[in-house]
Length: 340
Length: 250
Image 1 (spheres, rainbow over the protein chains, first blue to last red):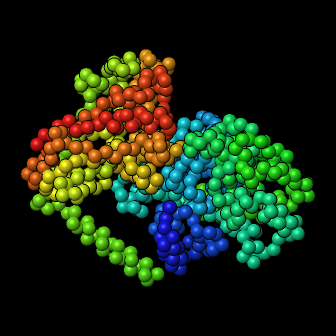
Image 2 (cartoon, rainbow over the protein chains, first blue to last red):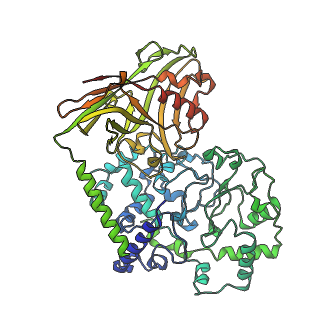
């Protein structure tokens, strides 16, 4: 999406700007103070542009992320379904309730490391991060608020002055609204788990975690590729023989993509339960059982999981111990990412 | 790093220079495009909120919404050069007469052989995040769940639809079913469009919403289209292909 040079330049500018920014402004969070682009991550689709991520822009985005003003009956915010304590996934429900208790059709995904995705939503239907908030805000079963109404509300609230202070514009338009939400979402970087500390030589795995990692690298890592634990491509994981949700095929119109969904990152998977696009599996154990014995022979089944994995109970425990090293407590507790 | 900076600085200088060249001069002129719509073969004006008979499908159709996008208007000069309108994105809404007249200024005086229009929104603007103006997603011509513009939106009522209604949201910007068409329209009888500093010619284009159903047939076949695909591709193509320049008022 961006040329390598642009990304490099932005990285350099960002690094330069971090030299002048005061760490204390952002609290003592380690992840932030290290800079938003972790040194052990590959290049991102989105540049961490210091202008985009200007503190006042991010703060406006955070305020709106947690403000009920963006739902039709002012009952819910983005943060209602994307809960920080669950790594910005749902509150342990298979499907999240929008206004009037209306249920969506897919499990709420966790939000982190969004700059590394090339397309968004479980079916990849959204081609740019800036466009993502439009879907939940306007969806009838989520926040149910037309954009024109959202802008009218914001322009007749104290946000108008707040935006004017930051952008100098007299009115808030769609572009500015999405710009601030995007800026906040880009700061949801998860790269400070025990796994990362081990990778950076600052910690060591327990014997069980090390066994889990070895198994993981051999059996799981071709889809859940470290260090992001996904390359955010799409696959059919044999959850159903014939999928009731077309998934990726709704976007590509290609029948062989039916039942394919974005491969999720396993970072913070300990807390993003329930699992799968429909939230049908409630525990990590149930997920491993699915890959052990439960894969349905869908015509679109991803070839990487055609052979049954048949994990023993000891192997499952080790894998879960390893997956738990991907839990990033700084993401879950960083006050800069919470409700203001 | 220094090399990159130099490159960027050079790029900015070049961009500044080229934008200076586009500054209006005394030899520039203006023109307008006035979009006109007729219904079917009759040549009668297309009217909204009126029950219309489709001679080919036999349907009765009452349109309550008809909007479509035009973009990247260009004029081809007799000497082979091309003038491009800046930030040329236009949402034509038949419920808003003001939107039917498009103004263009700062065109170098001279004789032009054809008018190029992209029907729909070019693919780049479909993949570049939130846009402003005519392309603002708040205009309800953008799919939130499957990024891309609704290039043509036609909604209304018909007794020939099982639901009594029809809604065609035609979009899709890539592949064989793309609903975007770039067309070079020539002026009637091979005339040239003359742009002068004094005049402001009006190019009258004629479009025919009945052509949406030319290949697709009766609304009963598929009264609702809300996603890219074969039907959207066919309907948009039939409509877009049918647009032509009827006459030019000097």
